[in-house]
Image (cartoon, rainbow, N blue to C red; front, side, top):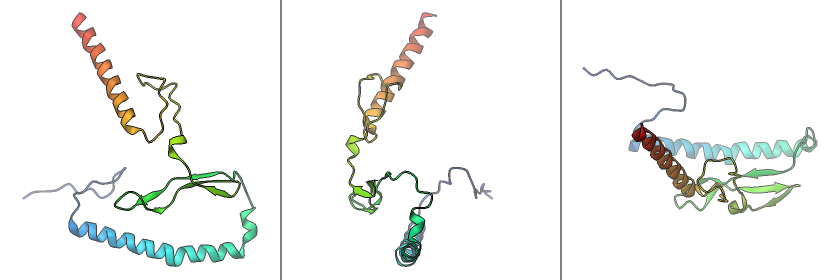
Length: 145
């Protein structure tokens, strides 16, 4: 008799092997959530917001917002939630290539690189170079001893 260790709650989530049934169930749950949000939640939020317009000024802080698109379709082009930038109540599309990562104190081999967060392949290559160089130095030190 095999005894399985059941994992019910684990920090960071639980990994399971997806089955056709579990994927169908997940898809159904997502569709139900989407229907609820579009047909019940958002109309309520909008009607309440119309009734309490003064609340938009109470506790007002920064008026600049940045949001990234998420929940892409199968092609990765259309998103359920579009991203953009709002500055002084004006919406603008954003260009991800204009967002730069400051790498002055990073461990890249070439610190002159100007990376955008979406250049993950460059990051992986630089990390690999660093690991190889570090391993090579350690190996060389061991061989000299």
